[in-house]
Image (cartoon, rainbow, N blue to C red; front, top):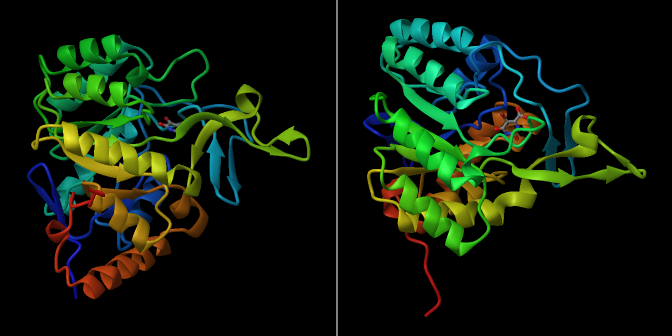
Length: 311
Ligand code: RRO
């Protein structure tokens, strides 16, 4: 049986599949379900300093080719997730989990990161620079000056293993500019991609979610080509110490295989997990292993990043 084991930073995971932040990770009950599934680890819902109710409902809608959401960063607040992770670290010292976070302002982001730095948390931290859904707050990573300044300040004090969750970019020049910034910092990973921001889905002449008159982040089948392009663009441009997590359009083992072929070391499942539940992890893992077996690949390193071009 081919192995789907992987590493991020210095941590090993039995499986390369996990949830994408935002799905099945708001409460301890949901996180426990992912933990007990075939997933290799989990990431928590992006935490702000204080708990947030988020945007008015309906704010998530499944559609045939994916999903649209404008959740508005609802979460239980940093201490809820951090206390749970600290407890888990005592009970399961051999597993590593991800804490996702961002402040509602740069000051709040620093306050949160200082608290995490000073805590006993030993896992991985994902700083979300790409929430598309808080009215009046643009996606941080679309503003390169702000992003560079934020990362410079963060790495003046933060020493724990940190990566960033990115929005999709759509221009080669933007891949170049973003990579030039990220390569200046001791980031351990970039996660490509968050939802494709501010799409609009219509049914019976009406939008399907209430916030922002229906505008919301698009996930699922729609976004796989964009996700793969971002994974591969950053795999080509980033220094090897910055690993890639691939997220977007993973419905099947073949989709996960393609993310890894483009350079991903870990693959996250969002919309499919929301639609299918945690059974998706075992199914997609088996499908990935069947593809690997058919091709004679025994481990992910046998094909990671080895996308072929036409000469
Ligand atoms: O909570 C959200 O509305 C949300 C977030 Br923070 C995010 O990063 N991506 C997304 O699609 N929704």
